[in-house]
Length: 639
Image (cartoon, rainbow, N blue to C red; front, side, top):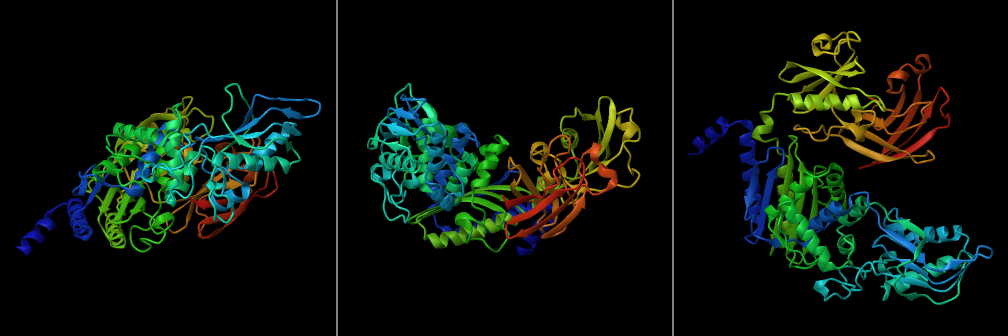
């Protein structure tokens, strides 16, 4: 009987055997979770369900509830949305003396990061500070306020907690809820006391900040609501929502989640309440084909429940939405063995660095849901919801299952994919055609040279520009090579495509580093796995703090650097290839057809950089033309 079973496995296609083996390993691991748990694992690449165990029974979500909160507010506001904290008034300023007559309202916009600059730097990294707000007001010329600073938290209801605490202060939240949060609701820098009246406390701190700028406020601070005709005197913006979600989900911050849930309700022009926000999140999940019961945004309430399949349906729905929206959600999730609540879990094994998932913990509840980028290139979506369990034992089961998923070598459909489809080849070539700034290039014609290779002609204004060879390598990843046209015309594949162009083909893996304007033109939705790269993002020392992106393979070989830009008299979109390992020194030219041989072939720039832990730091110096000769430093952190 054993021999017969082994023979069946040997006769199965490799992908089918791998899928069955994965299901068997997940089933074995799941036995340690008990009968009050459920699991659902789907291969998003092939669309196949790889494992299911009691996947339709709703379970306590714990902090996996934050997936529903995050998804809903991303859809409502977008990843670049910010929350403004403003000083407003209907008073007037004497243009000669600078004396302001009237009350000034500190209007909270639901920003959970608002506070002092020192507090923000210590706990959040960046954000809108009370010092910035005071500086803006001082810049208007106001020298004295004949009136009060009034804290306005009217964007939200005044309830300080969630249903689980009877809407009173909840220690698990760590702070009282308010639309006008200051220093996360803490009353001192040591975190040993909580603010009893958040809007009043914030107003008092605002008055003190103005006093520090020699702007006297004549009356005591109070709490109230700004009049409808109040005008904005100064305003500061929170970090983008994508950053706030990282702060929330990486460390599973309940206070942030409950604040954002009220922001979700307030964004529809109603007062932000927990119940309205939860209802909005439930409605959004239903649009994606997922059903959930929510009474709060953090998962502290044990009534927050969904079945494992419903969680995966939410994850799949998010994956199919706008790429920026999905990437913001993905980037907010803890990474196995690297950061957040998963920094000390799965530090060894296939899951490390491959699985991005939200954890959840209550007494006798442990949950883990998210995405794994498997070794074979498939994207795995999963939800493991375990109730009535020992939390540490559940962690061991979840970690084992995540390692199994991350080690998956591919589904039958993925392993059988040996032909490059024409549409994908045209999409790739179209990305190269768009990778030229203000030009009007496009794909004019394509030709299939083999099942795995398609070459496309890129032309502009009836003239052949280049030929893009796209090939599906046996490892399942796409590679590209560029070779010159035979002649300027015609722009047909018959006239320009060559099996063996002069000088041969120099293939590079298709990654964002392939393109001069990496993030803008890289084709994100292709039915092939993405080449595994590490992405480092940061800013330069230039006046406008231009972004810089560094792309490396898993061995830290640098595939490219892009994003540094200069005025049109120089060039922009620097890209370097084959720079080496952790320590980089490079002379090179710019990837721009008109500047390819800039300065008569002399080096156009020098680059020096080093990798320390998760951050590249270095400098770039231009060597010719009218470009700035001063070295430009940069720092880029692993995304």
